[in-house]
Image 1 (cartoon, rainbow, N blue to C red):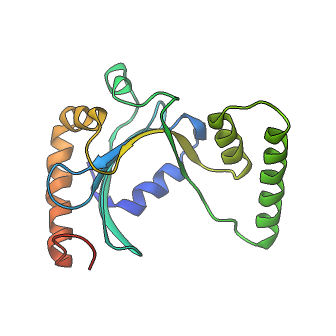
Image 2: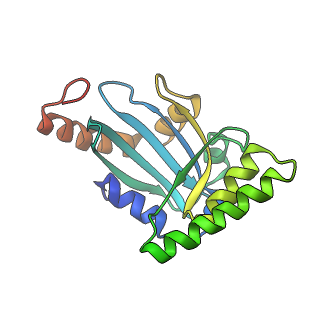
Image 3: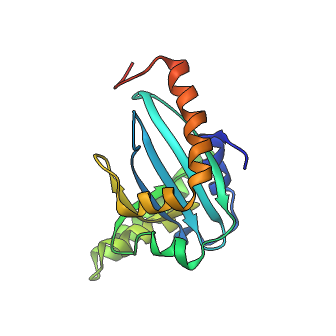
Length: 182
């Protein structure tokens, strides 16, 4: 298991050659101290664990690792279903031409959904497709507590949790941030 900066893990997720709409996530408060825990999972892309904290609103720090190559039945049972909240990883357009093309596609999606009965999740999926989002799907998230799935995944991957927690605590200690923003 290789612990890396959290942004490197997000880059790995973005670069996966898998269906972008099959990702699922679980996130919430850490068990102790500042920050959040997050698991990102895809049936063929694997399972990733992240630990992050906001040093200030513009500086997020953390660590992460890939903890499984695929999602088995046990892991699947801890992940949210499609009726949960939604998350997405997005990439900015490379240039003005790509931004205009993306905006045009999003505009067409909005027009199509305005003219037809639709569900919010369908609109979200279609907008993410129009924006070429590399990863999106349902998320179970609690900004004040820990969802049950988060605790179950933490227990399932206890060894990875211990290693990441130690690395994460070093980052927090090095920044002298004990509570809140610096």
